Length: 115
Image 1 (cartoon, one colour):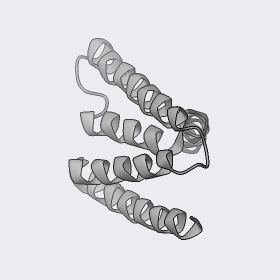
Image 2: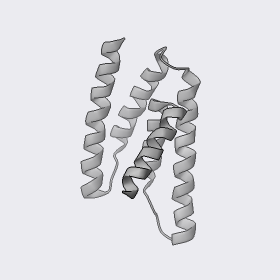
Image 3: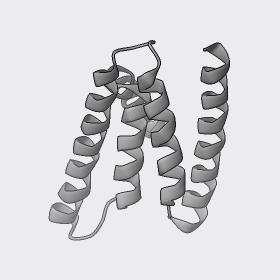
Image 4: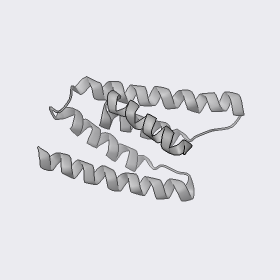
């Protein structure tokens, strides 16, 4: 089981590095990367490390929060504040992490982005 988690961590880390550089240069997040993170999330939900429904709640929470930001920016700014790929990536990250760790990751990312 430890080797499965290590392989998943390596795959997700490499995918996130690819997403970072492609999004930085082209402002695109390809579905193949989001699906890869989501598949790793399904594997993580299947492992007995946490309750499986925490991962589903995380996917829903990530999607709802980022959808609210997406549509809120359209209503307020009259343009997209972030792309829909970010919404899909947040849902996949929620599926991977579970809702508790997703909230922590969003808090850390917000503070790091503010600094």
